Amino acid sequence: MAWTDDALNEPQRRHVRESLAQLERQLGAIEAILAHARAPGLFPRYADDLSAAERRALAARLAQVRAALAAAVGECGLRPEAALGARQAIAAQWSVADMGLDDLLPAAMRAYGPLAPEAAGRLEQVAARLRAALAPVADAPPAVAAGLEAALAAALPEAMAAMAAALAEAALARVGND
Image 1 (cartoon, rainbow, N blue to C red):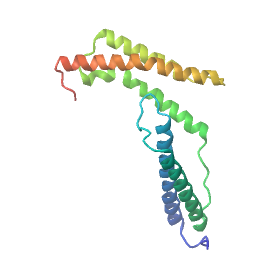
Image 2 (spheres, rainbow, N blue to C red):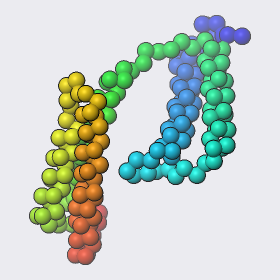
Image 3 (cartoon, one colour):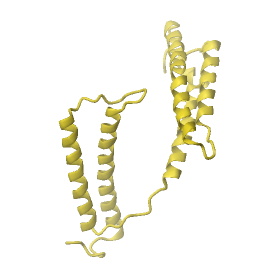
Image 4 (cartoon, rainbow, N blue to C red):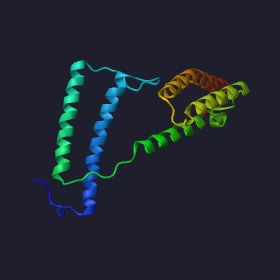
């Protein structure tokens, strides 16, 4: 039995909607963990320690909970709100990724002790290459996207080596880490 529009006031409807939306986000997070474990990236966070039977059982359970969630949304008389466009969300994530490259720059390493000029130069070069790879390309063909992944993968070992060298140098110099 669906509730009538006047069963809940607007703040109550928003609270119920957000509570149900949070459940949906948690289900999405579980699905993302399952997907990440199956295809880990350069920095794996989850190991695939589930059997095929466990994955099937989880998929069935997720489907069951999603069906119950859809029923609850209908029962509460909630209607979908306008969704954020994927283009805008992706653009925001590109910006965050670009800003994160500042953490590779020598200025961000000050807290770890003095940085050798050679290491500083290498970090600046790595950050510049990554920034160039992240730069927006108008109407980029799929090959460009594949090139971005390759550029990021190629630059990563050098960036990690430069950061490790800087941290080791700081540790050997007994410089405190704040």
